[in-house]
Amino acid sequence: MARAWNKWRWDGLGLSIAGLCLLHCIITTILLAVLASASGAFLNPVIHEVGLWLAIILGMIALGQGFQDHGLFLPATVGAIGIGMMGGALTLPHGGVEIAFTVVGVILLGVGHLLNQRARS
Figure (spheres, rainbow, N blue to C red):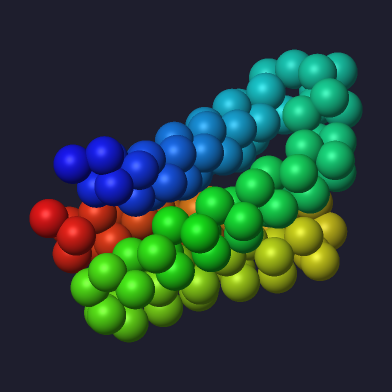
């Protein structure tokens, strides 16, 4: 029981961070449209870089452990595509395309974590 909880915790943590990232993207977009002066804090590249590293580390741990448990490639593949899109977004100039890549990447990573949790059940 403790081992199952430990492995679920990584996916749960990954999903939580993916949700926070998605909220960050949506809130930043709204704040940019409404409060241009507040955008500097939310668009700080450090926030994106730290978030990406957290997503990569947690994704590798959770999706890797899931693959060891159930042997399904789909959760890890979907999650890896999401991480790749998020990383690619860091190379783009701030704007609509960067936001779209980030949001789609976060959603794919979240779907990878959900698939991983369901495969473990």
